[in-house]
Each structure stands twice: as C-alpha cells, then as structure tokens.
Image 1 (cartoon, one colour):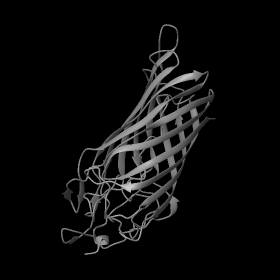
Image 2 (cartoon, one colour):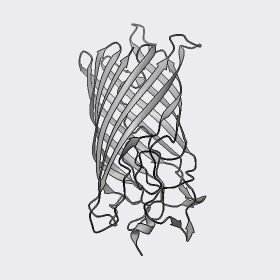
Image 3 (cartoon, rainbow, N blue to C red):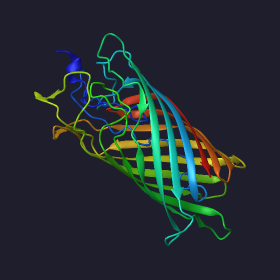
Image 4 (cartoon, rainbow, N blue to C red):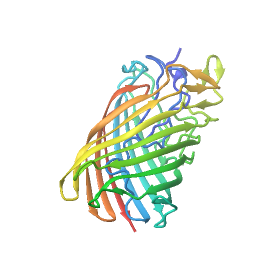
Amino acid sequence: MSPLKYLPACLVLSFASSAVFAADGPPAPSVTEPSGINLGGTSFYDGFAGPPGLSHLTYLKFSTASSLRTNSGKANSAFDNPKINVITLINQLSYYSPDTIGGGAHLGWSLLVPVVSLDATFGSNGPALQDNATGLGDVTVGPQIQFDPIVDAHGRPVFVQRVAFDTILPTGKYDKHKDLNPGSNYYSLNPYWAATWMPAPRWEVSWRLHYLYNFKNRDPASSSQDSFEGKPVSDSRAGQSAWANFTASYEVIPNVSVGINGYYFRQITDDQINGDRLSDSREKVLGIGPGMFWKISEGQGFWLNTYKETGVENRSRQDYAVQVRYAHTF
C-alpha cells in the first residue's frame, strides 16, 4: 500500500510549524492544532500592556524543522530527509480604555492578522507532504481586561495581569488538496491569563497560561486519498490543549533585560476522525532559549526570542526558531 494513503487528513502548520503523526511508519489520518496559537510569541513583561489607548505590534518569526516525531518521541522513519521552513509575519492591533470598571480593570480588545509562508521539502525515499505556499493565516480576535499594576510601599510595580477571551477564525488560506496550509479551516476558542511578577528590583518572571478548545473541520485536507478504518474522512477535530509561555529576566542595564524564554504545550484530549477517537494522537513539546527585551520608551518596546525544542511527541521538532517583536502605542 502507498504510504500516501495514510497521510494525515488535516495537516496544518502552526506558528511553531507543527505536524502530527500517530505512529512510526505511514501514519493514520490525523489532525493538528490550529495555525493561530501563540507558542513563545509573547514573553518578557507579558502582564503589561503599555499605556492605555491603541497599540500596534509587529511579529516576525522564522522556524525550521528537520524531524517529524511519533507518539513515542522518535523520528518518523516514513519520511526521508524532511525540511519544513516557516516564516510568519503578524500585525496586531490592541486597545484598552483609560477608564476603569472597578478594581483597576480596563476593558479592551485585540486583533491579530498573520501572513504565513510555508516551504516543505522531502527526500525521494518516502512520502512528500505538499505545502500551500504563502497566504493569510487565521485571524485571532477577542476582548480583554487589563489590570493596573499592584505596587509596593515605595511605588514599585510588583504584579500586573491581564485576561483575554480570544477566538481563532478560519480566515486563512486553505486548500483541501494540500497537506500544509496557512489556515486551519475550523474555529477555536483560546482564552488566556498573562501576568508578570517582579520579586525584586530589576527582576521579572512572566507567564501566559492558555486553554484551547477546537471545533470540527468539516472539510479535512490531504494530498492523498482520505480514508479512516475503511470509511471516507468527512470531518476531523483536534483535541483540547493547554500550554504556558514563561520567562525570567534581569535588567542588565537601564531598560534592557536578558533572560530565558520558553513554552510548554500539552494536548489533553485525543483527536477525532469522523467522530471516533484517534488514540496516541496527543501533541507535546517544550521549547526554550535565550532572549532579551529593550524598553525603547514608555510607549515602545522590542523583543528578541530564540527557541529550540525538546520532548516532542506527535509533531515536527524545530531545530531552532527566531522571533523579533516591536510594539508601539499611539
């Protein structure tokens, strides 16, 4: 049998260049998490949102992967010399009101619009996944509540937080005959809690805790024939997931901090094909690396983050990823 027959029914690359394979060798039809999730996209001082008003943020990220991992964490031998490069450009608009609704809480909203470029190559001694080139990714939009910082007796901020209730919309470029698409073709709910704790002057620890709930994809994509347990694949559904972005940094000179940034992602329920549970399909990954933050002014900031992945299961493993981010409040 051709291994192409058993390629995943819906392979979508996230900002982390993810791909799922349920077992070593030709995989069963599978699904992946949506293309709009934030794995390491935000980092140092994440609980802060800058001054009230309208802000524009630009993210530019490059990642490369040369290994596709199975449920046991081993390289999937079905693929010969895989190479998946992803370039992602995100423009984000966010706003929060200068007025409070009680308890130092400010209402706001956020809109993220990504453009994703996919370039996948494979050796001749195995299946070759087909990419959908460059196109608009899935838009993320939602309300948020930003809280005023808690300060100590000397007026120094020690804790600040934000909660958001994002929805990922299936607006991205999508071709049901391609394996790797900028868009996911289904809706997702993605609330999060971001916070920064400053235990001492010049030190910060930040985190963003996410939850992800995915709806059905009623038109799964594959460059090969879609079948599962002898039946045509009519729909798929990625499992629910939870993950954390985390950082710790030290201000080495005024307004410049260096430290460690990372993310830990874990899928907590199985994927589904035609409503049936797909065993051994849960994704897991830890990404970590050095990074820095430069506070250019009260309304401008610049971040540089690098990541290398380990402990990867049921997805591609990044060799490295580099991201720059710039924020400006009008």
